[in-house]
Amino acid sequence: MTTQKKAEAKQAFLIEQATACLAEKGYAHVSLRDIAKESGVSLGILHYYFASKEELLLAVISSYKGRFMEELEREVIAAPSGEWSAALARVLCRSLQEDRKLHRLWYDLQVQAMYVPAFGEQVKVIRSRLHQLISRMLVRLQREEQSSLTIDEDSAISLIYSAIDGFLFQFLLDESQKPEEAIARFEQTFAYLMHTLFSSESLSPKSR
Amino acid sequence: MTTQKKAEAKQAFLIEQATACLAEKGYAHVSLRDIAKESGVSLGILHYYFASKEELLLAVISSYKGRFMEELEREVIAAPSGEWSAALARVLCRSLQEDRKLHRLWYDLQVQAMYVPAFGEQVKVIRSRLHQLISRMLVRLQREEQSSLTIDEDSAISLIYSAIDGFLFQFLLDESQKPEEAIARFEQTFAYLMHTLFSSESLSPKSR
DNA sequence: AGAAAAACTGGACAGTCGTCCAAAAAAAAA
DNA sequence: TTTTTTTTTGGACGACTGTCCAGTTTTTCT
Image 1 (cartoon, rainbow over the protein chains, first blue to last red):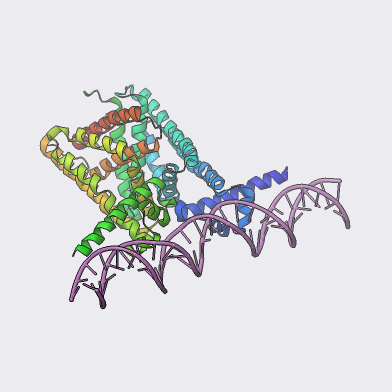
Image 2 (tube, rainbow over the protein chains, first blue to last red):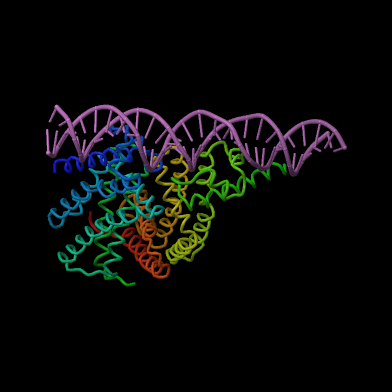
């Protein structure tokens, strides 16, 4: 049984290295030889542990967001009542600084999923997990403030998700490369965004 | 002079064909041979009119959004006072249906711009044009409703832009492939998004 | 008409790609 | 130890890539 464990460990190692390589060069420009060289193994090894390039990349997609998503869920759910918005901002900020290239990869893979159907399903899994996180926050907010939505919950979740996601995407696109200023600006604007989304959107009794 | 005009015309034709090919296969999987075959010309012609693949792709980026952007600016600016939000939704809806693959390509190119610096500048040009459009709408809204922003204007523009952009991105990612239902849902949710952004965001005198 | 320039062709070129495999090396089992 | 089994290697294979060019055809000009 040690043999199987060892195989899985090596597989996990290769996935990790492939993720780093992919985050550095992007899907369009990465090759199996890059990954092999970066991992310090020969080319044939990759085909020994993964039947094809596509299988390796699928393994990357379904595993590389694990740590981040777990941290996100843990931090946000564990945050005190009115402060999970700030908690969310804090986690995002830290992660955007430390793992910027990983987040860039996330959008790269999402785009590729629009062309390669096999990627689409794996991406869908992660996105639905993020949707669930937002859903949980929404439910909690409604319970705490006894408010009701003016649109159906699915639309609200989809809206909040896309607003946050779009905001992160724009942040990554700005290669201002001034960490201090950009991050500060991100934190401020993000707080405002969350405030806007979760105050007017969830309880506004306005017309229309 | 006819010679130069003809050359430019053919160049434009090749760019158009390349755009279609790129929209179909995506940046990562398109080749010059694909483009040549689709255009009905030989491979050498591409190198005759464009020094390199990168130069051709740059020409694609800087030209393919032209028509859409002009239509957008025309429709939105020409819309009656309180209805430009609906006008925006209408244009986006129609374009999302007819030129879905072109919009998919737009996100593909934005992502590639994060890896290839040469693309970054061209993408930046288009994005700043879209920002200007939003800026114009914001200014108009402030004048009409005599409201003031609670955050600086740049942040507001960036926020609105990313919200819309993220929303479009999520729409493209949903390959529900049910045009009627998905589009209807998009139109409804988009209207709500615009309402939220432009009412609570621009004039709310709330604290914080 | 002939001469000069532009447009176009088909293929060669040097690489790189993903895939695959026979054989060597290492590890585990006997 | 010897015998299996697992792991690893280095390279070969054909297909594909962007680039480039010696000719050929077409157009334009004198």
